[in-house]
Image (tube, rainbow, N blue to C red; front, side, top):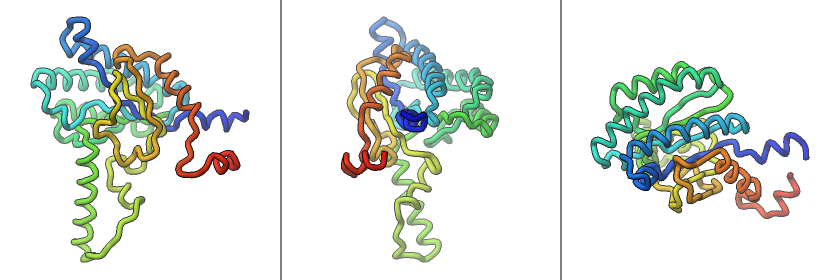
Length: 247
């Protein structure tokens, strides 16, 4: 197998729904925030693993719009953890060539958190080894509705009342403009749903579910997901014969 063909078996873009922090803490009779703290250690390990493998983009579902309905003390703790994580890992991101981006309604985040995020996004803007995207205050349905409304506003402003929009134009109105769709989605903790995450972008994404809770998700667990991905044939509507003919 050529090096190029071997490289194709590594997903270019991995997305992860990091689930199970609360259950991990409950099993140990700890406060839920202890689970989130342990989960942040897993984030660091998975980021390093992706970088080592040559994954170009990693998108983590860190905080959904629905999560704002959680108890206020948990939200405050999560925001404090996020602020600390972004601050503490900034230099490491730069050293390892990792660019930080966000998607979601980040204007809803506390001012201190947004300040640290903005600084890290700016200071890692030239990094090109890998892109780490945090989905924060994110809802895929809201993202799609916002894009539709932008199409309507643009059409009304230009008096193009019969304007038709193609997929490429619509894609440019999403938070993920300019980024590749995920090749692989991993969800931990045994849940088998995608929970309003990248609904448009994951039309052809390979889905991988594991019973492992996020704080326990190790490098070995990540490699199991990669190995499963490598065993799958991605056809994008074509036949097996067509895919093999162009391999």
